[in-house]
Image (tube, rainbow, N blue to C red; front, side):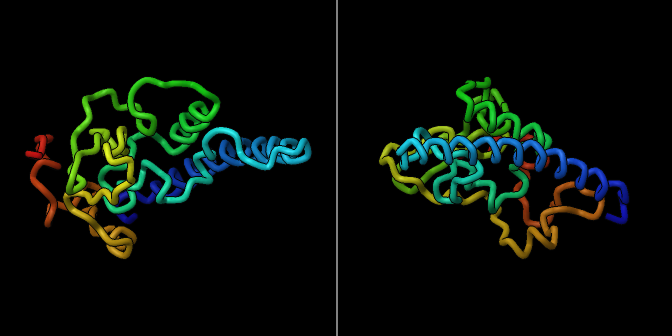
Amino acid sequence: MEANPDALARAMEELHEARVLWLVRADEYTAQRRAEKQAGRRAVRGPRPWWLQSWWESPDQAWYEDPLRHPSLRLSEYVRRQNAILDGADPPGCPACGDEGPPVLSSTGHGWVELCRGCARALAPCRCGQRHRLVPDTPFHWNEIWQRAHMSDNGTPNPVGLPVSLFFNLDPVR
């Protein structure tokens, strides 16, 4: 924060904008579910909304341990994109970040999953049909993420212990 004191204000503005978008959509969903329940439909039709998915249901689980592979979109753009998908839109590229590059393969130990090159979202599940824990090349524990061990003081990725491919845009050998 000392290197960029305005970063906190920008982060709060981004969070507020995304929160407003999410709250409007959550209120609409709540009203819809109430009406469905009153009509006798207790089961949720279609997939659960993106904000109600638990971490094991989410194809975004690779993000949780790899802070360097989050979507590059502003949070409000991510929320808009997820809401559009919930409405039935099919935006181009990765559902999370919009990256249209070819996917990268990640081993599950007995098969392969396709991950988005930009954000590591699982684009295609393992052929066995099971969800697997996707471990990044350089995993970080939550306490390390909160302590920003993955970042240097100037806001760039910390080169200590990270693969060289992250700094030179090289594709790791898989």
